Length: 208
Image (cartoon, rainbow, N blue to C red; front, side, top):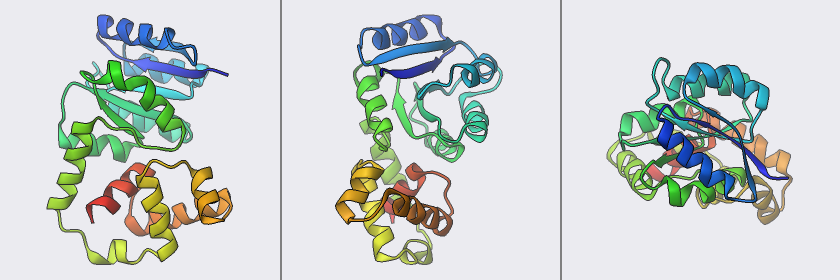
């Protein structure tokens, strides 16, 4: 079955360009290309894509707010943000809203398809510039030692494997535990690190 992808992008030329990239890949199908958050919030629950590519700077409601509302209604939905700006505040606001990845539009034509595959495998795709900014940002901010240090050795092992982009099933196999046990550990990790997504957890873990 091809991966079902929806686009949310207000610029028509960019939206059509991204649609063509998806349509030329036999493993992808574009189930919607929406010019606004309002239309996306109305139509995406109907089409129920596997992955959403979400522009941040939309007219009306922005992409971060749209992401938060979609994730609240459909927690399993995978959303990768697209933007022309490598703004650190937007990055972290997007992650807090529930985004699973973050790509710069200038690199999206090359990175888009691999990013979709990666996010479906449980990874957190980011353009190289974004990844460097995220890690650098967390290196500059002192985190309370109690947060990461309260993680058990197994929880740290799981976060370490997540940071390498391994999907949950592969982590379970490598550690000799069940997928449900991995999810149980992740629930504990989120609580201890005060985060809401695997991407936030990995970023905080790497920046410690």
